[in-house]
Amino acid sequence: MSLNLPIRTSSSSQRNQASRNYFTNYTPPSSTEAINGPVREPARELLPPADRLIVGVDFGTTFSGTTFSCVAVYSNDKCDIIANDQGNRTTPSIVAFNDTERLIGDAAKNQMAMNPHHTVFDAKRLIGRKFQDSEVQADMKHFSFKVVEKATKPVIEVEFKGETKQFTPEEISAMVLVKMRETAEAYL
Image (cartoon, rainbow, N blue to C red):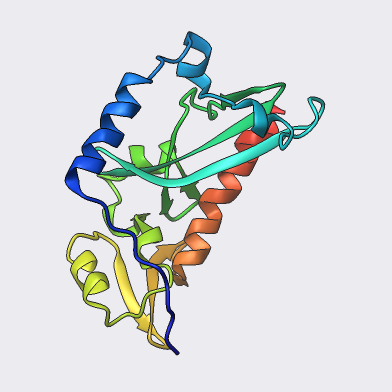
């Protein structure tokens, strides 16, 4: 199938003029906009009524080599990022397994050095990939936990309560998302 799409081109002078126009007409944001971001008037009609809450999750933003998640609530024209049970506004996207329990978030990160082979991080990188993908193989060199192949997919293998368990990357990610839901529920 062939698509006939128009291709736009512009000269460098047109691009430079567009940049000049942008910066010439630029107005710095108010202090409220700088914190919460601008809400353009035409978009206000798309916002929910003031009495409704919207909960959003940012799942898996990498910062300083660690992947974090956060949850926020939008209500009454403002967005609040919710602190977790440790008082942090971001939660490490890490799940750890040991002989007695499963740990998620800060608790999992804090014991990582003592239990590296059963502490799972960056599971999001494995979602939707085949075990033989070059990126999966490269990532596995940096993982301290074991990744095995099951039906051509990567599966994480850990010891949990004295048994060998296998979890898909989606299951590990779901554990983190449940933790984020619990954080939001505690706030609300």
